[in-house]
Length: 344
View 1 (tube, rainbow, N blue to C red):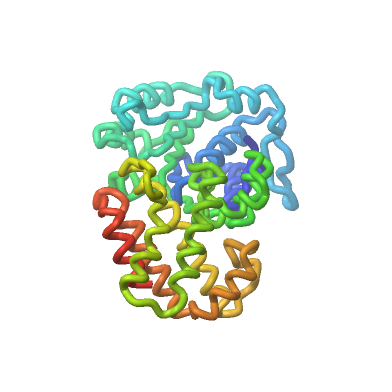
View 2 (view 1 turned 120 degrees about the vertical axis):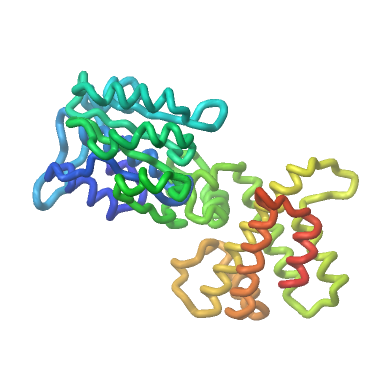
């Protein structure tokens, strides 16, 4: 996994490449940002860059990068390099103190087969407090030849004493174009399905992959159908009836409460992307800004009923509905849908 294999985050990739080239990379960093945007992949790319046997580039014109082909790069890619340690949560969903004590002990020795030992703690917010405390001395005085990379989308779960010892590198969301490219090239999505999935993913590749492409297309179709039904003035009874399309329930069909909640959340996220696009259309923004460019004609039609203000209120209401469905609230899907349709 080389830096050039990472999609997006160009400024962070450049910053890391130049820091490695100048030997100024901090010995401990926190990679923070939304889920599913490539933080862990970039951490592994840093491990390759620090240990590559044949660095590519590395002058004033070209940033350095791992070759991706030497013995060291291949061993890191296969996760068998003895000096690249990936720490993950166990079956309990937590990273226990014993796992951290083991890597701290190992980091006290010189690297065995590489130039630098790289410890990557994925989902570092899952470190139990005792494990975080066990890291403190090492983060304050990192051993020569070791780098600690803490990867998290919830940095507030880290102890202040841990965060104060580690500079943050903040990752942004991936663009819709980037996600479409990844879905098509690496996950063999149909372009139309990839566009639908990317539009509903809020900049997260993992969210785009959470469900099948058919689910994403159906979610977007349902969301658009509800917006069409709610576009003209309706009485409350008509609005509540239109909202039934969002739950995915069918007469005679059987769905568990969890399935209904999942389907509704997916359709609300799709609706959120449509509202964002309607704001772009209403403000006459660039077509490249649309999350659903393949629906440009329909968005232009809907924009006659949903001006910028109404679309903005709609997006805020959808966001509130999604949060109400999620833990710890777990609001009733029916109550959420009824409330939302009356707001739109």
